[in-house]
Length: 399
Image (tube, rainbow, N blue to C red; front, side):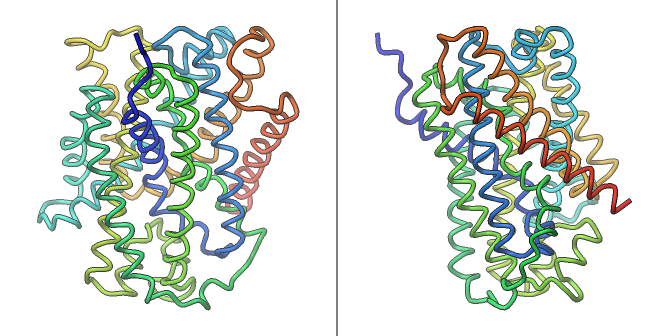
């Protein structure tokens, strides 16, 4: 019997990777990269895309060396022992709760702005979770189906925004190039390419077909990269760095790029398209992150995803970040910065490289999805070290 997943699973896998990557970071990226300028930021984008694609392949490699249904906590436990298990638990919960908080906060605000509901601001996050958590509750197949719809909305609104918004671009806004300052955005750009938490769920969904999973990762991260670069060009070209409702002011207040966009092009069709695109981007990422978190908790707590145990997993997945988003509704940029600077670098950068290194040493006959041997792994370790150094450095000088 042919056990290969159908072609639709391959496209769905690409969209799940892309959708998980393209999230709340979309709203933060132009704000945090504005002081560095477009061209230096483009170089940081390329580095982060290449690195996160590599670590995703390494994590998949480790996943396929272990029995089905394992998640990151089991991978860490298998190759790093009890310390590795604790390390994975702490970092995973820190990172994914930070990401979920940012998505709920940003998605809830956009949902209220998009729909025009006249309700208190705190209700946005609650409504967002109530609408989209059921898809995660019912598993990867349910998420895949709604993700197709959301990605269609994302693509339509994105290209419409490009076509109609291009005329507002002022090329003089793109001339700034401050390379040292561009490194300040590294943690958030790093986070913007995070999707690895969904890999164990994706591997199960695509029947552990290594070749197609590799294509899904390469294709999905490439889609995210192209979308980010064009979005960056438009927003930095439309919104000036300085002045009232400029990007520097947005960064100082912890705001996203949506409100400055409205101030510079008005509240017409172009703004609505940008707002819709941002909403679809956040929602697809929220679904992927929440799906990965729920599967992680099921694996780590040894809870079968059935009956009351599934309900308990859903409560643990959604209630903590919802409470954080309701308590700190303006924590959007801070949550993303903390997630990328520390949690993302260690959990989705350092840990996959370390696990792949040990797994290759112990089981030489397993699948190799990233060529280059130890030299490539050492180069990836160096990049993680640079990211962590930049995070600590900028936190220190801004203290």
